[in-house]
Length: 189
Image 1 (cartoon, rainbow, N blue to C red):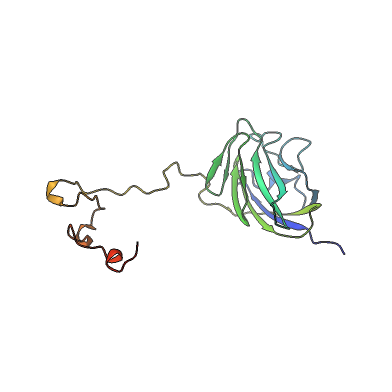
Image 2: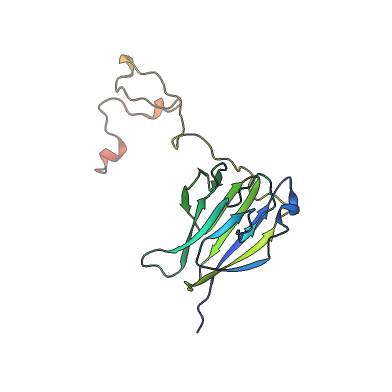
């Protein structure tokens, strides 16, 4: 009995080049478990006709996680000059990231949405390509901020008692110095 193949459903969009960038994209591509190359070069399995794209821009690389049957995938950047945005992360040359079941990817103006539908076969996978006339990503650049949001702090001083810094508007909710916090009063940490 033949095992079902993992399917990558890949939607593609380019805001300025439109469908012309995707003339070499087949509707369906079955690939062995080697890396699937994306770029404008002759050896790329997914060839895109874009001048700013490297011959080997990125690869989708299948692998098997220990103790797991279906294939997993990572995306690896192969372009020295280009960067690739994946689910909020900006990747540079030779950086890679594991893909989740749904992924938003942007590079060289291309917007790509990759959905992974797991199968049991470890010998091949299938890519189904869809060309989208509409944008797939509405915020394709990663934010260059810290994970924690900056919240303005009230000034502290001897008249504040506890020395705790609290966000504006929350000072009324703090207990007075020496008072037990609700979690402490209930014996919780």
